[in-house]
Amino acid sequence: MESVKNMIPMNLKSHTIHRTLTHMTRRMKEIKIDDETREVLKQALLRLSLSARAYHKVIKVAQTIADIAGSKNIARQHVLEALQYRPKHE
Image (cartoon, rainbow, N blue to C red):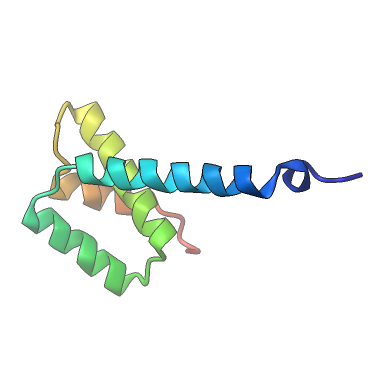
């Protein structure tokens, strides 16, 4: 039985990937992060050896925390809280 993934034409796969990346890039530009928070993210990236995927997950979780707190910007405390939710094995 052929997998669903193999049934999708290659040009459609490329289009979907491109659309996803474009959306992620646009979304990242919309996120407002001050210099102090950006430095916390940079230190986490280096000290925890975060992959690009893990780095973006932290930002997404921090954005959710900021949204729940009613903040339009991601603050330092939002990033620090998001880092605490990471699995210990990563």
